Length: 99
Image (cartoon, rainbow, N blue to C red; front, side):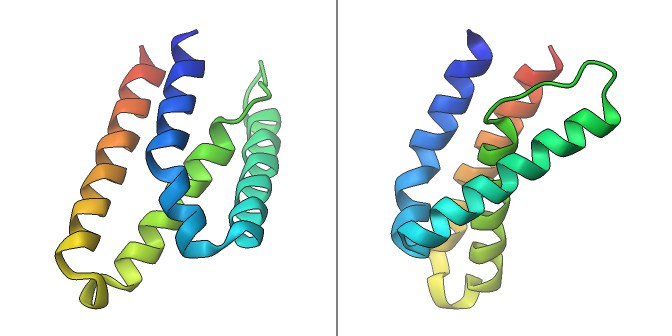
């Protein structure tokens, strides 16, 4: 249940902003591609593969962070604040994922 809540929180935290910046089509494409890739990697590397949205959520966070990094000069302080939110969300997911 905690895992599901973290995925929901993460998606709610960054999803609307990513969709606004990327557009609905690119948002959906990024989400689906990251989800498929995450599940394929899990199936390949894990003796107990899992299916779920974690790969898609992490993929969105990575794409958003990359976008913010590439446009840091243009976005200024608001971009830095968004990068901090993404970093915090990633850290929280990793910490709870390891426990």
